[in-house]
Image 1: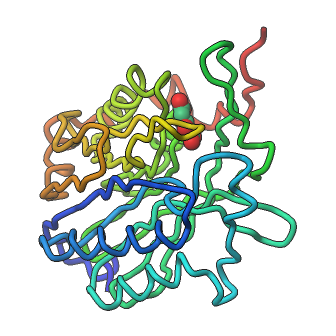
Image 2 (image 1 turned 180 degrees about the vertical axis):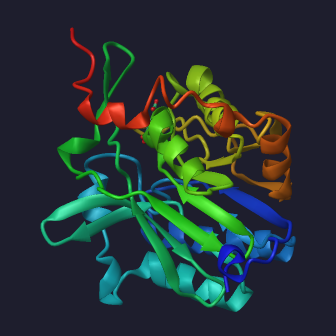
Length: 294
Ligand SMILES: O=C(O)CCC(=O)C(=O)O
């Protein structure tokens, strides 16, 4: 039974972020992920996170080729993770892979319970479409469709909200998760060499400090030979915006001991949600937003 459902205070746990080397070899990527998750569990991790697009190169050419139909029983990537979660009796927040659903593709994260069930599925809502001339241009919407639902996973350790990479740029989403009782937002992500150095940590600390919750972000390792070079730097930020654990660009596993009671404590120390002036501003106003005018 989940923490919230049982009304019992959630226990502390060890979190692991597997910063994987990702190649063009899908089978190799799966085998590599399996080894990393086993290693994390053998070191005591109860919740293990994988990166965004861990089974394929991050490119619009690759997404259709590597996509899997998730509910068909014929998805090698999710089958491997489901078996692992069950064998090791851990939660796996399965990064993301390209999902094929009818004639559409999504950037999808599946969450597996210690019983090996898919307990949540999140489809990246905010697609990464940017154009910084001479620096980086990427348009996920050339191949992918955005999801249309947020996802809260109620686990025995606490409530986790799921976002993927570019989603961390949208404070509204994190705020809604906080309002729904989320204590840790997990973002599988693959920032790049342009935005990574300036925004990756800043955005995570911003989401953490605004909402007084943990933020955990898991990237692929950096590969300078890939068409898209990931920034790496998987990390965990605490509810006071402190860096709890981090790494640099190489493959590896980041561990953090998480006690979600800390979230409650920070919120008691500084009761921002009670101090909000909802009479002056209302998140619902965003619904009428027409975006920036140029
Ligand atoms: O927001 C960024 O700068 C990077 C986002 C990204 O790489 C992604 O959404 O996959």
